[in-house]
Every structure is written in structure tokens, then in C-alpha cells.
Image (cartoon, rainbow, N blue to C red):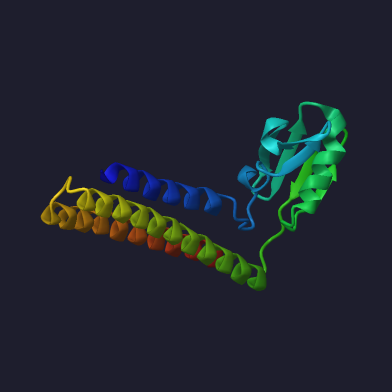
Length: 181
């Protein structure tokens, strides 16, 4: 019974980790741009489906599209994404210098990280609510006893508490990483 709740909780934590991986921390990271949607031949595609993204060094990303005709569309999409990145087009690739973070930018990213952790906690609460509804339904239909319902709710609360602790730990590590100069 708790499998669904466990699955939803793990999904929320995995999503948080994925979102944290995309936060710009003054270092070049392909995850910064891989999910940017680019208009290619009239349809939107994620950048990772049309180009290889790699690190040249710790501050520079290199994007090599498989079709050279979409270089300008990729550069425009990166500029329009609001990440504060300035792509430079070359003959067959795009270079992006990732700027060093200022104190103000670090604080902004810290706020984004906090919001992402709150969103993950909301996902955990939603999973908890869904599971409690399922337990109540089983109780109303007399498929489980009140003692079984109480035991399941206690087990569920342990899963929720563990997940919230994990989310807080992820946030603390990310915040320390953000504020590290």
C-alpha cells in the first residue's frame, strides 16, 4: 500500500535533485542548457536532441549541433532562456562563457533553491494526502480495521518525515555549494 506513496516521494526528491543540477553556480555544466527548447524546422525540440553539449573547461560550454543550419536558432534560444548566458556562435559550434557569480546572484540562486525544496515538500505532502485518502477509503469499506489504518498512517508518517529530512539535507548542501566562493 505504501509503495505508491514511496514512489511519489522518491519522484519528488529525484525531481529536486534534477532541478538543483541545472542551477548555475559559476561553473559550466551541460545541464544548464540541455533542456532549453529550440525552434527547429517549425517545432520545438530540447537542445540535447539536436546537439552535443560538453565542457571545454570549468567556465566554458561547447555546443556542436548535428545540423549546422540551426546554430543561430540555438544561440537565440539560449539568449532568450533568461539564464544570463551569452552564446558566441562560431563556424560550426557555439561557445558559452559562464560568468562568475556575484554575491547578489548567489543570493538569488539561494532563493530559487529554497523554492525548489519547498516545491518538493509540497509533492511529498500531496503524496501523503493521496495515501491517507486511500487508507480512509479502505477503512470506510471495512477492508481494514482501525488499528491497521492507524499502523499504515504511522508508517506513512515515517516515510514523509524521512523524505522531508532528505529534502532539507539536499537544500543545505546546495545552499553551501551556492554560497561557496
